[in-house]
Length: 456
Image (cartoon, rainbow, N blue to C red; front, top):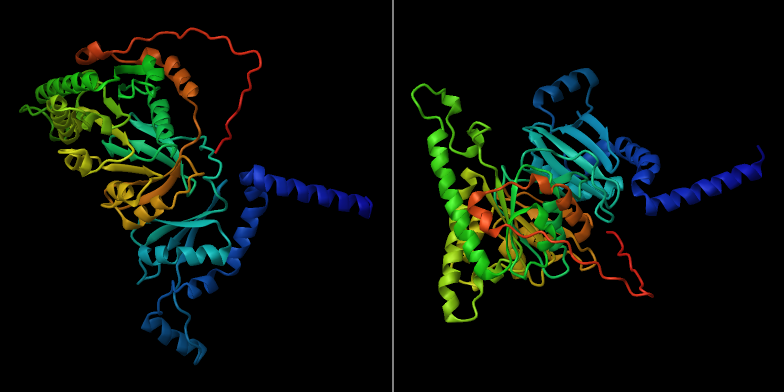
């Protein structure tokens, strides 16, 4: 093969790699980025650990033994030991055994320095067990173009909603975190988050209840899979009363079958529906509230009694309903004490927090201020062009940056129609069962121009 041919092949190969770096970053990472990152990490591992102050002085007995065997040479300080390597399509994971005297917080503080030393897009630290941490190195911006993993978490109430910035899926598990709050300004991706939730819940054995006081423009397309739907404050008032009746009936059922008889094994005694026999267990209910402010705001004094009743019912559901399988997912642009009595009490019960781009710092404080101050700073730094990006946190103080995949309203509506046969009947909610109608087809104009939105 001539030199000119080799040069041409080299130029073509380089061009393809440059295109892959932009259009298919996972492919570029696998072919080029991963080998280069492995070389940088292991060729400078000890030097980098020492520069980042992730070292401890050697014990006295090792110094003494080293002097006996090697003369005056000083024993080298201890560093974290690599105990596992796992390449991924988005980065690299290193499992480290920390030297005695180091804590995971020391590695977290040095994560930014490690990122620059190894030329990695981001470094995340996760504690596995005492003395063992995972370094999750990300080779490129995985949130720039969201591609969900092929293997998604499964469970009776687990929904994979978004992708985290470390390449792992963000899973919304209602059994672990029963109630959640989602905040965000207009065009921030808040509605997209709700669509991804409904799309994930549709194939599960669960009753989905919608409250959308914007006349149902957001949730009516999902009507085939909804057990109940309220599209006005008056309907929401009646629906919340029905949910309270359903909750009380479930508590009565739980008391009858929680297994406190004299012949029951101790491990069979339960205080929630998940310990009941499967044939007796009522179907779980997820209540999706599209805009919480519409339930709090009033236009006249005559609305005050209705508002106070709805707020009281919501607080009761948030405090008590988890044990009987009723879960709240509350969305809003802002959720503070200015909404009126009961707003702060309700917000305190919503453990899971997801905050999209906000118009002011106070809104980010409402969602994340009691979790982590760094999460508040990260939420206020979300750019307007990064729609769908959010900060997810919980009461443990942990938080992560996530982004939902772009999902059209029609795509979720099609999934709801596909799984409409799974919609359970809950007698207490039957009066609020939405009517499913097929909209009439409207002929398109002759010279219509269709604009396809860019994916994020």
